Amino acid sequence: MVSYRNDQEAPNSDDRRSMLGQTEWLDVEAALDYAREQGAQGFVLVGWSMGASIALLLARSSKHRDLILGLCLVAPVTDWRSTIIAGGRSARLPAVLIRLAMHVLADSSLRRTIQLKETIDLHALDWIRNGSDLRIPTLVLHSAGDKSVPIELSRKFSEAHKDTVELVELPATPHTLEWNRDRELWESALAQWLSRRTD
Image (tube, rainbow, N blue to C red; front, side, top):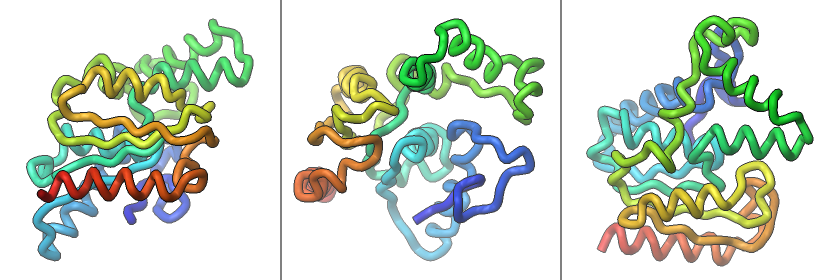
């Protein structure tokens, strides 16, 4: 179990701001360094929500990426733009305000207004339109009841990566509670997928 900056079990960054995985992945990279030093020869990364985004960034940028045997992504954020838009609509924010928020994240001058140390590259965090480098077998577990990260994003992600991504849709439940809603289906889907990775 790996903690990363600004979560409840790890130190805060200087600005105490989430970078949507863009910098947090480096903390998980340090954990992979440690695991390698202890003799680990391969990894299967499991991440929920933003943790899934972090796992995808590791698949792209980690020096250990050749040792990553698979990814299991639960209720994954595979496109931050669409996730922010969905969250804004759910909160009944005006569309212009949602667009402004995304502009602030990406603008080198405006990001200072929300005390971000660097801009956030939403394009690089879009695995539906900009994830052609994903080559690692990936299991996605997601629920149609997720109102925070719409399951439609996982469907599009799976469609965009037919050769590597398998999507298992679970019964309706809130964000990241798929295991709580149907433990048997969640665990059997993961066990079968892992079995195929090791055969």
